[in-house]
Length: 201
Image (cartoon, rainbow, N blue to C red; front, side, top):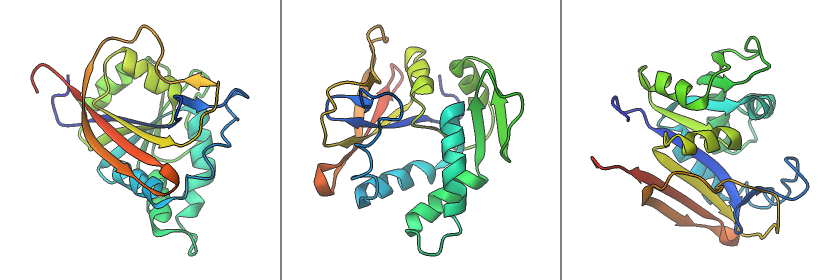
């Protein structure tokens, strides 16, 4: 599947009971804030972007990320890890999946109205480092369904939401994964990564 070394890495924050947002809808993300600024969370994010050259995002997340992160790169009082990620997000290649955008409103960005797995196959054929999907659940679900994910990366925040949207839905193909990283931090935050185990591994 992956012939030139470019990994597809997907990353998302989940509650203990497996939701990526609460029952109030996509804006119900209050469970994230008490933990997002912990050392383990910042180090987790740093470990994602450092080997990567491409951010793959859905339109909604792209608008949120690009609206927030680039200015952080120049904030002298920001944590150095936050500045590093912000500068990377500003300068790296962005690939946005959208059926409504006709052109990219951000520099170094390509927009595709195509299935996520087709876009990933095209990106893998190009030169570069890791391709990282940051929190775009619809993109991650599509790539899991098409078995295009090389690494699953999670932050588990220690709350039970009792409802909302789940990442793993019935009907996904059966696949095997090996634990690549497990780090625990303050407040019970856990950073996890699993690598896809394929027949030729």
